[in-house]
Length: 270
Image (cartoon, rainbow, N blue to C red):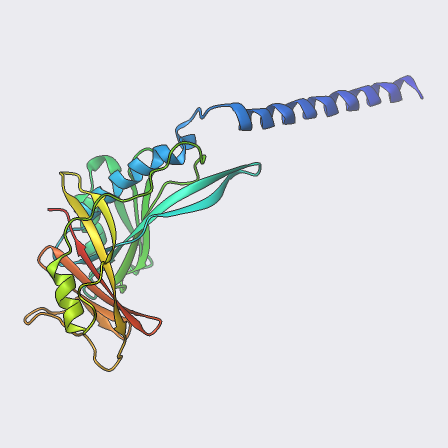
């Protein structure tokens, strides 16, 4: 082998060793180093911030023109890097609005959030496509995408992918007493009004709790249309998939799922 060939071989060997050292250091860091940036705060640290932001969102959406439904807390597996797994938390707030009021509702919610969230609504394509975004801090994002003609808006809170370490308290706070509107709606629908509902709840920014109470209401009869709507109350939304209306601080949503009715009653922040 010539001297030139030996130099090339040594250079290649040095590069290979250096790559191996960098890879080893990277893997060691992934396994051993504690989080060093805010994005790496684990799920246990992220959940209280997600709950705080959810409370702020539901308080901002408390206008009596709109009907609310709080979704379940979801915890899902995700990948922080190709060699490091994590978990992500998210939660939806469904806001049901009168026809043509999607932009007004999103802008109203944006205005009701804390100034530090820098919430904004962007309209494109002649105002027909809407985008909502807010930064709740601690890398908790709040966003939504909708058409201006939509009546059912889904606003999502998301922690992003986090290390799975730490103690993650996933239980919601106590939801409080069952609203009379749930019992009354179940009775009108000839369902078991004594059933214990499933609950989803968050603490409100100024104290108290906002919660959604969920109960099965039996077989759906698509020919009946909205049932149990109080006299003088006009549903905010009604079609073959269900109906929704507001009674003061309480939101009532009845939906048909798999041939059965489900009743959701949501109490808001005072």
